[in-house]
Amino acid sequence: MVDDDDDALFEAAAFDDDQGDAEPEPTRCLFSEQVFADPAECLAHAKAAYGLDLAAIAGALALDFDGRLRLVNFVRSAAAKPGADPAAVVASAAQAAAAGPAAAPPWAADEYLVPALDDDPLLFSWCADAPDALADDGSDAPAAPEAAADVDALVEAMAQMRSEVAALVGALDEPAAAAAEAAAAEGEASSSAAGAAAAPAPAAAAEAEEEAGQYGRGGPASSSYFDSYAALQIHHDMLADAVRTEGYRDAIEGNAALLKDKVVLDVGCGTGILSMFCARAGARLVIGVDASEIIEHARKIVAANGLSEKVVLLRGTVETVALPAGVEKVDVIVSEWMGYALLYESMLPSVLFARDRHLAAGGAMLPSSCTMLVSASSHDKLAFWDDVYGFDYAHLADVDRKEASVELVPPETLLSAAAPFRVVDTTSAADAELDFTAPFELAATAEGTLRCFVVHFDTAFAPAGGVSSSFTTAASATPTHWKQTALYLKRPLELRPGDAITGTVGCVRHSGYKRAYDFSVSFAVNGGETSAQLFTMR
Image (tube, rainbow, N blue to C red):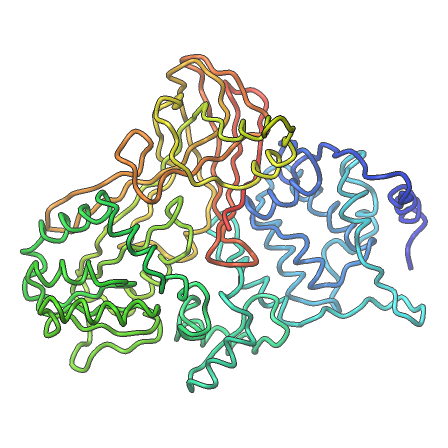
């Protein structure tokens, strides 16, 4: 039964349709003093930066308006306590979701009917949007979740955050049903993604995850991701990228002594160029693995270059293929796994899986690490929408601003030097560390309007006992096919030399497609008002 206090709140939230869309209401962060443009942005930030997906919890527990209201007030109240740890608050909510609708959540007490924040827009938007939980017979019994697997998936996803908070890792490349069908046809085990309607028991899902790796299930035929790499144009673009290809060639051939008479695993070998570099550098055996149809062309290329005896190409995902007979471990793993903004495409988890399963103790990883960097820029690609053949297209600028833009940023627009905010060490990184929020500090070096932050990455080859080399994708360097990633701000700011920009960059795999990433930026200039914004890269 809904209390009287609840009725009052609900009536205030139930606006008539003829009143039109309400203006966006600034909404304070659930965990800090940051203020967002509207409730949706606030909720998205909570998910991206803290791993708290209120929508997933509400869906798992079939929360109605009453339940959502209590949940929001519980989170705000718990986070506001002196010394409160956001990770503990998130964990408490996740545990309640895991317990299911039958158990009383920590927000069950009536004290959470009282708004923790006066005039909280979340109470009149997200809470009011809750589906009617009353059964058709008029009883007060809440509707059951669409799938019990939602709870397990939520808990599993939350557990993958780094030490401060869980990260949501997203769903499979294809619907779980398709993965299961493909696995059954191939006689392989499969497991389902978060939110799948027919998920296996948690123990079975964990076993399948450990056995096959979260990016290798379903086989190559079931994934449009692998299909996209069957096209020649993408391989032409990568091979023609001299910074990329010569960078790998120089690192491999410069470490010929390290590769001599060794066994090398090339993860995602494509047309086989890295495999052939390794064979030419003296490797005894190179095992190239790729799930795309392009490998059929690679076999012919390898044969045409007289390397078939040294280079063995296997079609399939690295999580599912078996090494050739007689090969128990490999000495070196080489892979060109980097995507836009380094992490897009989420190929690195497959490389880490290969490292943990196949690399011998003391083996080398090429590359050994990549560093993500951010800089300030006055670049304004979005100005195009201001006047399109005499028409105002500002609406599309607003839409465009929500996406991470992959483009070549003119180096003359940079207003600061680049600052590193994350190092990904392929020799030791864990999958869970690929969802994170990291701090950065910039100092303005020129006067201008800060319109976007620019992300790029540097790649290092530094094997133990070997020769070190590197290449960069910075705006000030030779362009690469990765270009840079621009994150455009809603409210540009004027900078002067010496201004200090401090903030954080968040990177989290998208909840609907795990190879995509969502980015968040929170920053302040000279310790002033903090601004926060979210971006998608799909």
